Length: 67
Image (cartoon, rainbow, N blue to C red; front, top):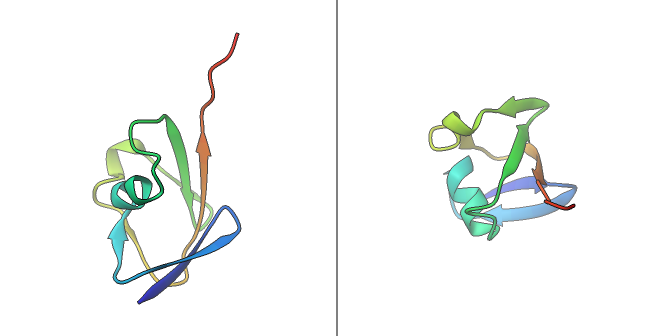
């Protein structure tokens, strides 16, 4: 079991997971997002290989279109 903080809220998962899987579990898949893990930007190209581990702090920003 791991615990991470996403946008200030605690989340628990049964195992470490990739940023890409975290985005899917948070129902953000397919949206334009920016992810910061422990103060560092995670490039979209690295979402599939960057692991989220116990104690990580993430900020996920979703782009919203408008006119």
